[in-house]
Length: 164
Image (cartoon, rainbow, N blue to C red):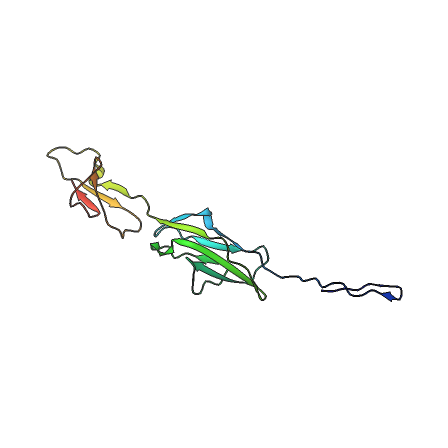
């Protein structure tokens, strides 16, 4: 940009040029419920890319790889497995100007703590009494199992049920 001033009938020379660079501020990434981890198979986590410069078109990356089809300001994680864990970044393009990528938002995968139930709701086992079957339940029920008694691994007990 340059400018000149006219006062009455006298016009100045034009000013030295001023260069204005147009940029878009880096966006930020946030998650529903401020999640930094998610349970595999649990409640869906949505990420939001927020730009203080306005809205435009978006691009999401997971661990520096572009996520195909993720072009909205929100991205719903496919949390049915552990492939959704990692570092998420986003960028926004407003008009023809693209922002730098956001700082990474890191999500880790976790597994819900299982619960144990027993047949007949038995909390006391009588010697010579009826067999009690313990059941280990988790959501989703797709993993492998390990049973312990008093902190020691029970050899061969690798199923969701264990008969006592």
